Image 1 (cartoon, rainbow, N blue to C red):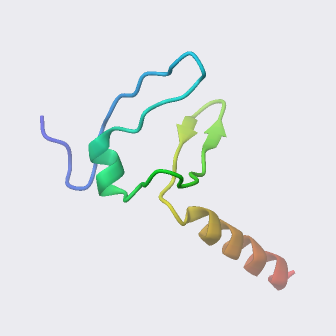
Image 2: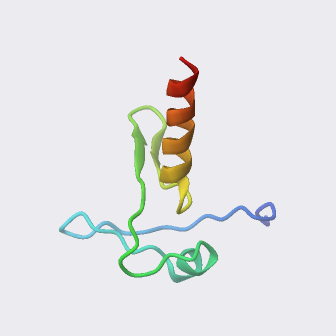
Length: 70
């Protein structure tokens, strides 16, 4: 069964220090380079998500806009 276009599934193993290696294909597709900071979101019911690079500034900007509206 082929994944829908633009959708991917990978696995990663957690090491003894709690580190994971992001698969090479994922790093290439999402332009993740050594030293990049990634935003990790967690929800106890839904799990962990790693949004695209730049999502933090987008979230921060929308939060500021919401505050300005109040």
